[in-house]
Amino acid sequence: MQAQIDIDVRCQGWPDEASLTETIHASVTAATETAGLQFPDGAELSLVFTGDADMQEINRQWRGIDKPTNVLSFPGDDIQPGEAAGQMLGDIVFALETLQREARLEDKLFDHHLRHLVVHGFLHLFGYDHMTDEDARVMENLERDALARMGIEDPYAGEA
Image 1 (cartoon, helix red, strand yellow):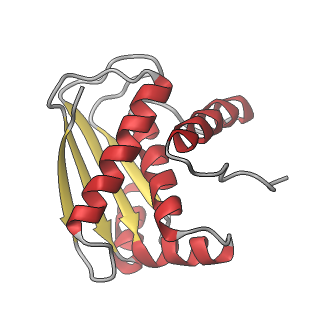
Image 2: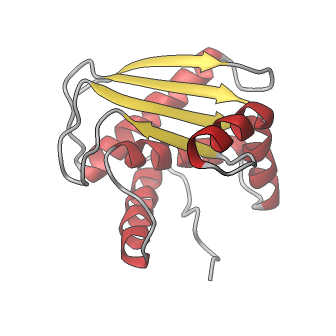
Image 3: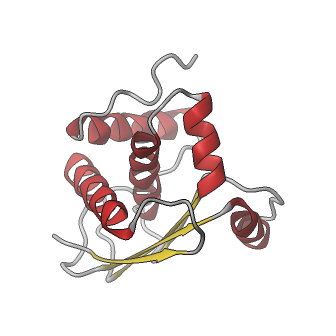
């Protein structure tokens, strides 16, 4: 299964579009294979790469939280984990300065942190969340396994 991916880069500082495309494809493939995600061939996925100011506005508008966050996902369908998605997978939005700051604070390569958040955001489109401890455990294990497929260390290592 291949998704039709639309990339919208809204601020400077992100990697070039070819690098973003490779990162997205690798991350989406890893998440799809790890979690057994199902969607129609050619399903639509939109990714927006913006800055903190724009992300803060989006977060305020959609979640009532007046601050930037690293990633937001907007599923095309309201599905539960394990269910197949429809033609419109959804939208994932990333905030550059937040990702850069987190990568620096957590001593991670920016590319590895971005790949983690692509996987994380993509799983949200398929009904995965981290609202309960059990849901978080399931989602984090899928993230670890997907990242391991790309040769990236456990992003949660060292957390209490």
